[in-house]
Image: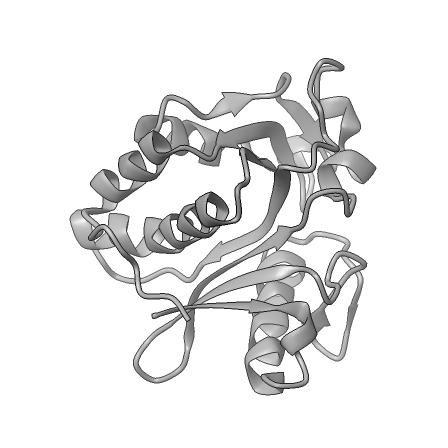
Length: 207
């Protein structure tokens, strides 16, 4: 089950938000070694506002299986504020119909084949369904080059916005890697590519 909530609902779902922020801390600060702001084991930054949209997939016991964050148009974002050098000057980062994807996490599971694909892509399908309904035209993101390679096997319409660039000292440094800015077109064809890859029905349950 995928839940779609806004930051303004944090008071309504305090346990759910704390689980998500704790998972982000464990994933990005503890496991990846990223120097991100955190407090009391929770990773929260300036983009976690009342208008931010969160997608959270839960298992039958209420554990988070996957999550991601969408920063609304014209609210700034990591690409614009921290990684503008990854984007060619012709790209429009402040369009009112372009939102930003960050903090994408899929909790590893011992799945193989189609089940693993569905586990990775179901929350992205829900995100694309939401973006289509909201009238978005594109979703931008800064991602590791390995994730882009995988995404391009799913949907060739995903477009790099610039060249890949090392961050944090590159692969040889703790917390380092190679990042690239991308644009995911919000189109029915893109949604169908992700559905086919994960063999996901035409509608993913969302609340």
